[in-house]
Structures are given as structure tokens and as C-alpha cells.
Amino acid sequence: MIARQSVWSNDDVAKLAKEFIPCADEVWRLQNSDDADCVHFRKWCDEGGTLNGDGPQTTRQGTFCCTPSGIFLGSLNHRQPARVAQMLRDALKKYNEIKKEDRLLKEDPAKTWETINRAEKQYPTDGLVLRVNSRDMPREGLRQDDWRTHAWNFEYVWFRKPELEGLVPNSFDKNTKWDIPDTVVRRIARYALIDNVRGQTPSWSNEQVKEDEIECSVSNIKRGTVYFDMTGKFLMEAEGRKIELTLVGKGEYNTRKQKLEKFELVLAGERTGRTQYNAREDDTATAPIAYVLHIAPDHPTEKIAPAEFWSYGWR
Image: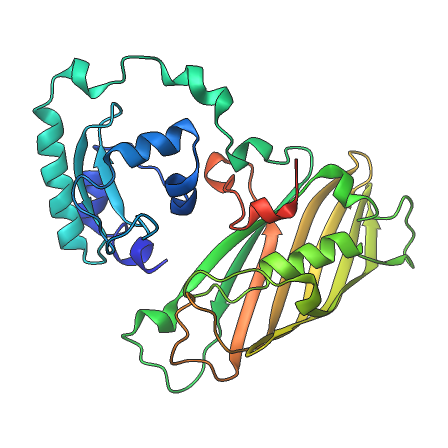
């Protein structure tokens, strides 16, 4: 997240980026999959030298520039906007010196699309997609000039339609109360409520989820829409780390369309400990953390696969 905030928000970088077709992908897959897009990436990614050390399993995380045909133009892994801007200028200069026929692949890449196993192909169009925003809450003793003080992150949680059975009752009145199904609550606990504020972190295992519940109660019924409140609590704990949260939320269900039109959760509590890559090396003491979950907009930029999608077990 720090690179997105410090580099790609920079005016010079943003202006130069308009000369490119920017895209982002999960680097582990690019390094390890035999899909055509991953093989294509590995053909040229190291031409400018490995960015993060030697070895085939060293991460290739960074910013790369190339032609569609795979001619390498430049690479860098840095948070200084000026250095990224200069790399983009150099790459653009190289690109303009290449003949048009050499910039493109000889064959139509659309022919290989059906063979590529990307998680986005399993986007649950008839299910539910929640966007998860995470951040630390204000506390004393933090430096205001440290990016970590203002860090935030986001994630997505996907549900297929069959997994949502029982999310709302078949009938309502003003006294209706119910619990969100275990399958939904457990996925939220394991994959949404993680300490990824500053960096990457693994999901919780089933055994590490000690408490997870969301209770609902109707607050109003008007013109075919059921308005309901939600309360709940979560506790996830493993050796050396812990997150404990309370929840409040609002929902709206359109009975005529049989559609969930609003599902918003706010969770606040405390976290303790660290994982290998979440940048908590010197910040493991118990501290406040918060999350907001809501239905993701139906837009291409929001159709990003969850970080641990492959552990969902979908086939």
C-alpha cells in the first residue's frame, strides 16, 4: 500500500503512466504457474537483473515495463517517485524506438485466454462480494512522518450463491431475528479480519477462530425492503498473535427483487503480535485496529481475487 500512496499518486508518475497500459498481478503466481501469461512474464522479467536478490524463488515484486511482444524496457522496485518516473521515461524512449511490428505478438493472445487459469474467471456474479478496508486506529506514541502511522489496506471476500443459503430468512416481520450462517461468518473471520494493514499476512485457520457470530434483527420494513441491524463479536488467536473485535452493522434486503442491497459491517477492537511480512516487527504490543466491510461495486477495478482465493476450495 505504501508504494501506491507514495509513488502512483505522484503527479509526474501519474502523467507518465498515461502513456502505458498499467496492470497489476500476484507475483507468486507469475513466478510459479505454467499458464501462458506467467510463462510470458518469466521470459523477460529478469533482463534488467533480479530486483530483490538472487535465486529462482526470490520474489520478482516490482514495477516492470515491456512491449506486448515481451521486449523488456525497464524494471525497478522502489518507493521514491523520482526514480520510478525516470524508469518510466527511459522505458517510453526505448518503446518509441522499436518498430511497430516488433512491439506486438505474432499471434493473437486471445487464442490462449481459455487455457489460462485465473481466479477472476470464478468471480461470483450471482453471489456476494465484500470489500474489506482495514486500518490502525489512532493512538499515542506514533510518528506522524512515518508511513506506517497512516497505513491502510483492502481485501475482498467472495461467496458463491449456494454459500449464501440462509443469509436472510424466507419471511419477515418486525420482530424477526436470526443469525448469519456459519459458512459466511467463518469466511469473514478467516479471510477478512487479518492484520494486513501494513503488509501481507496469512489467513486464520479454522482452529484459530475461537469466536465468530453475527446476529441480526429487523429494524423496519418499508415498501418491500427489510432494514436490519447486526451485532457480533470475533476472536481469532494463534501462537503469538491475536485479534479481538466487536461488530455493528446495517443491512437492507429487497424482498421484491430477492436481493441484498446493503450489507455494511464496522468492526473495532485490538490486535496483538505479528506475522512474517506484515511490517509489525517493532509493533507487536496490543493496539487498536478496525475494519469496514461493504458490498463491492460492480466495476472491473473491484473484481480482484482475494489474496488466498485458492484456499477456498472452489472448483
